[in-house]
Amino acid sequence: MSEQMHESPVKVAVVQMDPQVGLENKAKNVQMTLDYINQAASNGAKLIVLPELCNTGYSFQTREEAFAHAEPVPNGKTVETWVAIANERNVYLVAGITELDGNYLYDSAVLIGPEGYIGKYRKAHLWYKEKLFFTPGDTGFPVFETKMGRIGLLICWDIWFPEVARILSMQGADIICSCNNWVWTPPPLFDETGKCMASYLTMTAAHSNNLFIAAANRVGEERGGKFLGCSLIAGNNGWPITGPASPEEETILYADINLVSSRQAPIWNELNDLIRDRRTDLYNEMLGYQLGKKLPR
Amino acid sequence: MSEQMHESPVKVAVVQMDPQVGLENKAKNVQMTLDYINQAASNGAKLIVLPELCNTGYSFQTREEAFAHAEPVPNGKTVETWVAIANERNVYLVAGITELDGNYLYDSAVLIGPEGYIGKYRKAHLWYKEKLFFTPGDTGFPVFETKMGRIGLLICWDIWFPEVARILSMQGADIICSCNNWVWTPPPLFDETGKCMASYLTMTAAHSNNLFIAAANRVGEERGGKFLGCSLIAGNNGWPITGPASPEEETILYADINLVSSRQAPIWNELNDLIRDRRTDLYNEMLGYQLGKKLPR
Image 1 (cartoon, one colour):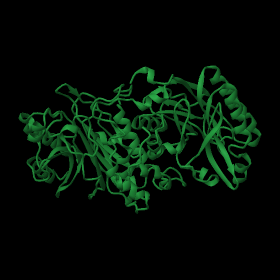
Image 2 (image 1 turned 30 degrees about the vertical axis):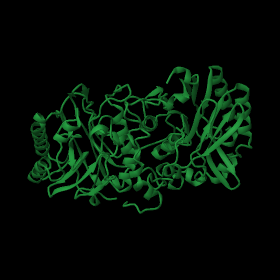
Image 3 (image 1 turned 135 degrees about the vertical axis):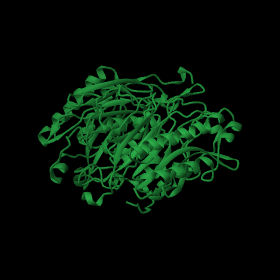
């Protein structure tokens, strides 16, 4: 494939920030997202990824508090603010948001472009106390066409389920924008390279699915919980293009990526294509367990 | 769960060896497996994992040559030899073998115990020139009950398909014995910790599926191809218990493992169980692509 067939590279940015839960902090959190979006846009970023629940912080204590933080998507003030800046700065944004839909709360991510609100994803796999506040997502795993390429979304604990990146890949995603609040996992938290298990889950998902993953995690502490940082952008060969970022500091990471180059590379050899090589005829066991077959444990 | 509910730990060994292709080498390769099995057994190993195609070497040049190396399973000389030593040394063996079945060749792995031949797995996902010699496996992804616990098998390129470890896990595998001839992948081959992408695919598959993986790879060069070593045993938290081994040297790695401890650990928190958390209701997209839905790429 000649270079002329490619789109131009776009600068992708992942924002590692420290929002704080509490109604008194919500406006500050949103302002912080705007500051980082402006900074990234001024540095040339065209696709900017922010962490999970970045407008509200994470650690709700009661259902009442969680509901009080939430707002409709797309018809809420935070999304309207993000739509305005995406238009003004001519950028695409992916950001996590606490979504209110009647009596339902969702841990959601939105995709917004210069042209306005594009779509949302509601987190399918809920982590720990999220289960006390949120409803498991009902959107499936959508992939959105944009002028840059196809964008899939996932949120945090989702990456522990290899099904998610696989399903996004099977729909042709060129890049997964991954919004995270990575926290504790069974020790060790980090290895000698500064990576956590979530770093490796991100890398291997990118590698096994021939796509890019831009993973923004938050940092900081909140009500006794500590977040892991470690944001990264993985190439479609799986290795980090940039990152992991520090476990402590707010920062922005950048990478110049031809999103649609994921459609040709990596070339393994003249006989293998990883996606074509899938043995869907043998995956019936998995299909069985999807359809309710009893587990031996 | 109290410790009394556990089986005793067993010593698991992975053998990193250098077999060589060529009919004149086959008896030497099998003798080498016996030497390593004896050494591991003398060091207390009860479950010994050998590399892919360890009785024949890997790099066949013609179909005629591949057929000439192959033999029936279990009614062939190599398996008979392995059955004898497993009985004599009171150990379980997993080893890769070039299998002949009429006009079909398979890249297979056998599980053999003190009681004799237990079963086989035929590699589902064929790598590169294997496609010129072997038939893609037709055994599905079997899990075998043993006195130590449940054992699943996979071979090399299989680990690039997250479906495989997931399906083995869904059938209750406590450990996956992974027989490999890992070779080139898109660069970089290794990172600063001496791990290759196959190391990380092994680690994240163990982590995401709450099971142990004992991965034996070969070393050495053969007809211009170089193998990566890097054998490891991953805990059910994903991190290596031992390894990665060197990319060059023959060696044996050992780990003491309660196989059935994978049925309780890791405990994430009181609300999450990774397998229970699977959103099989949302995995219909994957199911669709298993049933032949057209890919966008």
